[in-house]
Length: 142
Image (cartoon, rainbow, N blue to C red; front, side):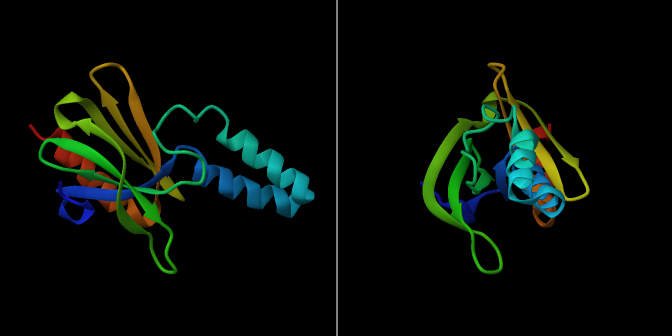
């Protein structure tokens, strides 16, 4: 089985709402102290728990391979994240119904919809948006 470095396209992803939650937490702490930070983080990340195979605080590398999507565990590095060979989830590439990336000020949102009605939704840090666009292009080309 091939590792993350052999992907056709790939990028680092985080659970949906985590970047917004982090920013809200910092802003809440600045304005309201520690309790404000915790409350703002919780409110910003509410309702996103079932949108991806990642847990709160995790980071992963999502790669497109000829026959499937593979999500590898990643670890935060001093300068940039590093993918590992530990796989978190897979999905057949043929089961992908739609893929979109929406660019925001601080981050983007990568959404992948499957034929069975389920979907994966991730935050993508701005620095990794080109990889998210490459994933969408590789999944939606005709």
